[in-house]
Length: 290
Image (cartoon, rainbow, N blue to C red):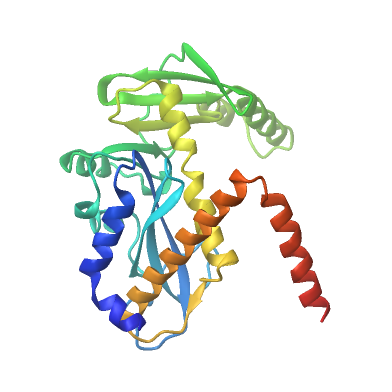
């Protein structure tokens, strides 16, 4: 059954398009699962967060922030990462949506590619990017999760710079402690102090900093979805030996995850999440005791 489902990608794409329709903000990210199959083209040695030297299958996910639902799940070869993954799916995304990415995808070429495809995007940059102007004046401020955030913008290219006031203080304190321990010196401090808890974000959106920052922080929703998929639904490995079956496996995984989020939404609306979790932990405890 999985093999037959995996062969019909045109039907899968039609399903993805339906789920994505009218999504204003889509968060994109990659993850991977390990594979023990010997004859699978998708399974390749590649980078993973655990530094485990096993064959893996990468997969991409688009998560609709405004719908709070996963809307696309697609496998990739284990060696495909970052910009190649985005390129492989660009023609399948509604350009009216804003795509939010992780700083791990940041490259000097990616903004050009996104603009060429008429994408609206929010792309955080790594601190060492030479294009970041850390001298942008941050004359605006807002609160996020009861913490102050200052921001400024260089209109050319719409480069946003954000600074967490409390978090900057914490990072500076840690750095001073390292100086006292002899692990850092005054010269290191002068260089690092320009960047203490500052986030640079590149976007082609003509919006206020608060809106861009909130949309950026909403990218955590896709990480939560990955966690639910691997832990709650236990889609963390596969023994399949056929590439079509793998495509079918991920499509069924998406449907399972979609239903999971639908049920979770219903529980939240009825204020039953806490009761459900308590019942679940009690059931797991009884299972463990047996």
